[in-house]
Amino acid sequence: MDFSLSTEQKQIRDMVAEFADEEIKPRAEEIDETDEFPRDLVDEMADLGLMGMPFPEEYGGAGLDYHSYAIGLEEISRGSGGLGTVVAAHTSLAGNMLYAFGDEDQKQTYLTPLNRGEDVGAFALSEPGAGSDVPAMETTADRDGDEYVLNGNKLWISNGSVADTVVVFAKTDPEAGNRGISSFVVRPGDDDGFHVEGTEDKLGDKGCPTAELRFDELRLPADRRLGEEGRGFVHALKTLNGGRITIAARSIGLARAALEDSLEYAQDREQFDQPISEFQTIQHKLADMDTKVQAAKMLMHRAADKKIRGEDFVKDAAQAKLYASEISREVANEGIQIHGGYGYTKDFEVERYYRDAKLNEIYEGTSEVLRNTIANELLE
Image 1 (tube, rainbow, N blue to C red):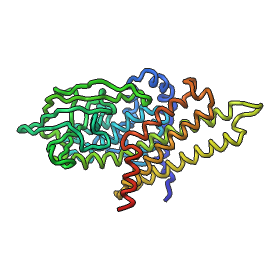
Image 2 (cartoon, rainbow, N blue to C red):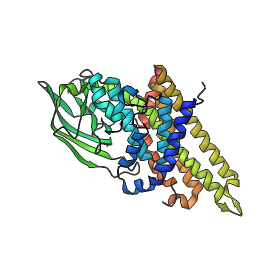
Image 3 (spheres, helix red, strand yellow):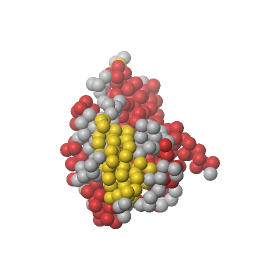
Image 4 (cartoon, helix red, strand yellow):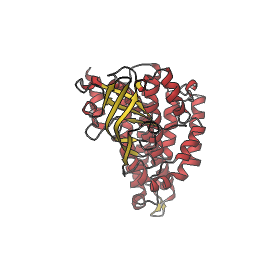
């Protein structure tokens, strides 16, 4: 299969790459140090159409195909892993939920401002006792006439403390297992009973606030439910499946950043009266790093291609996310090794890439869960 880029895809890549180099990378160290949500950069990305890349123009999106979206997110993540997560959670999770399962009014009302970057989106699925085990969630949404009453807690919610629109999963029938989960649109600024309990102090992924949320007798009109009651678990799985393609993109962006920095450093750094790039050991590291990046790209674009064609891409997305996430950590690790002692300090950015890369193996399906998914698809 030929994954050569079209003229439009190259233009998207070059435009986002330029933005990443000129606007994101100069701010990345500051974002990492302060861990503050870079709203000004989000506003700039909105002006460029980067907050609604894969959605139709009729809903305020950029109308790009999934290859272009993945390429754009790869470049954003090359600049800042945290900003890559901001865009991925906003678009792949919150946006895709509304686009795939919202009715026309919900798309116009909630998806359009997300795509324009006027609102920020979040996806509230995980709980303190329900991470990979989604049906173990304890958040409930009890029907009361024309409303639902939401109670419970959510944890590890990317963008959770800054979001204007949060897609929340809750049990509408606690006795029905995964068939008793439904999904809802919550508006933190409008809905009484929405509380941000705090944000996590994380190893990496700085600039994307990861929040704990609490819902206390939060009343939602019934028209905030997405799709049919009891379909939330299916909604979540389908959305996460598409989201895995973009976590692969985030992984590739970080791995590319580590590779590019290492190539430059290896040619500048001299030991024993020659650049360390002259040593075969360093050359082999660089060769392996680039090979892993290229292989991850192929897996990512294969999954995106199947998604675009409407084919089953569960295994492909899982493989892309699994492989890309693991090689992002491996490539960042080798980047530190090539930099030697300097790589372990904050004088160089490779230590940040390593911290940011680790998250890829945990969120939107841990590596262990993805291996289960791939094996299940093979055995079926």
